[in-house]
Image (cartoon, rainbow over all chains, first blue to last red; front, side, top):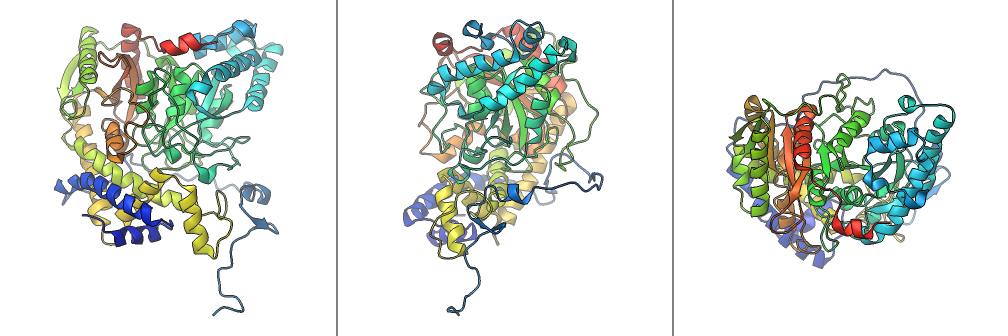
Length: 100
Length: 500
């Protein structure tokens, strides 16, 4: 399966990464080279083989349900690029008064 | 006293004993370690950050115990031992950068469980170690802060992604370090730097506080110069952690028990078909066969097995790893932590440009690959197929372990390569993890043991000893027997010449 330029742009959009035209061109070549190798996996006949998500069988093991303090607000905001009034500050997400 | 103190010639037990005996204090041990880092790390660049305040505070606790009348028996198992951690493990008082611009200024707000357990065992934290960005790589060249250099030849890579962890031990700057291994990121750099490096069974060690790459494959493990130190480190870090639901509840084991019991009657097999792979260096293949012969001479029952599905491991890994990574790295969006562009027009613009500017090329490649593999229409062909391939690889291992206790392969197809040699071709870099990847997919444990210098390159060759789930004691015993037989000198000649 070979990726087209528009597919590279679509995947970048899904991944929320703003790529330059140059990066798109480079990634198209590199990803297709890697996919060319990865596609050997299609040779395996795995019709009735069950998938493995985790190699070690584990069963749920619950810890005692005892409340304990989480991160303080101060620590939670310690690494925030921008914060205000004890909250994370982000750009406006919904339309304001002068927008539709 | 510290002028002449050379910790690099002492192992962890000897350092602890010497401190208990009053030969030098824990503080002097820390001072000696930082002097050595100052002398050597300019050439090696293993450290992203050094933490003298944390090390001296830890040393003070050990020295206070001794001043209070404690004896050797009372000291914790890693008392006064200088250690350091891959920079994807959180430790309060440090930045945890993952060697990425996107986390360059990220300050830890809690401790990684494995790190905390090393410190509870009395170790002295020297700092945080360089790595490929977010552990994506096999050479440590993908660090945003510049490559680490192999102490055996500073024009060469130390391997990766835990290259800083391997190089720091190789150069004698830290006695024990921790790294993380998703497809070989502990064992391959261990091999290329000529040190002992262990990936424990999936679930042995809590992953809490280690920045996630591929959650179904990641595992933390130790680097050291000796097998015994590897066992002591496992004693410290293994065990159930309520903060990691995939950590396994098992009775506590002392991994140092039976270490010297030898390999008589142990069933050890070379993985025959994997040694026939293109790309294996003749010197590596020869060394691997020579080690199998040594095991036979030491009394092991030596044979051969095939792992026919293992050749699909690389494909499965480069689907599952990036798929899980693309999901795990979605959290780096410039909102709660990490790099954020200054002039975003709206929130989507903020996400897409913060990520584009914050992530390096390999991180972007892996996120793109994983996003594609998980996207609508391709999920079954890639991710679904890879998860099924994982099952047949596990079955291959199960068949092999029905007849054998330990499987042998090289750790890496070649010895250390030149810095820059594989940068232009991501696929050739990926192939250097051919021998290590199937072990992660199956959740097995494996240790890389330095077994000599390659006949052609004169650089360290690592032998990979693979055990079934929870068979760490078995592979350590086998590794210890060979270590004693070979007597490999882990000190790089250039480091001996440069050393303080």
